[in-house]
Amino acid sequence: MLEETAKRLALKGVGLQLTESAMARLLSEGYDVEYGARPMRRAVTSLVHDTLSESLLREEVTEGDQVCWSWCDFTFTWLGSSGSGQSGSLERLALGRSRVKSG
Image 1 (cartoon, helix red, strand yellow):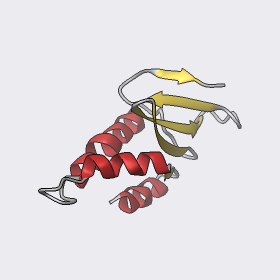
Image 2 (cartoon, rainbow, N blue to C red; image 1 turned 90 degrees about the vertical axis):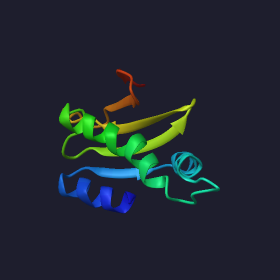
Image 3 (cartoon, rainbow, N blue to C red; image 1 turned 60 degrees about the vertical axis):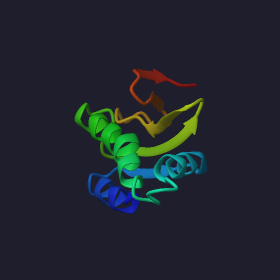
Image 4 (tube, one colour; image 1 turned 90 degrees about the horizontal axis):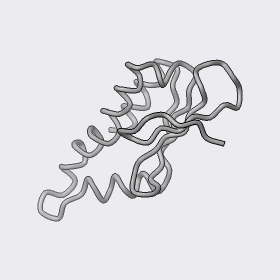
């Protein structure tokens, strides 16, 4: 599922990576003893696809960006290079929250 997402993003010139903490969180959200891994698609859709889609539509993620998802402080965040062309500029977005410049 995430490989398909990464391939579609690559066609738009955007890279996608997930940290071990993000993968662990997706596994815990997407696995259910009764249903197995069936809820995984819903977890990936709600936690990754929906937010990425909104960010692409708002042009917060643009061609040349590298999106790296992490699970920290009970929220998913992503770090990506700015689409403004300023090399080394990093931006942090907490899911469902406003954009905040980081160090």
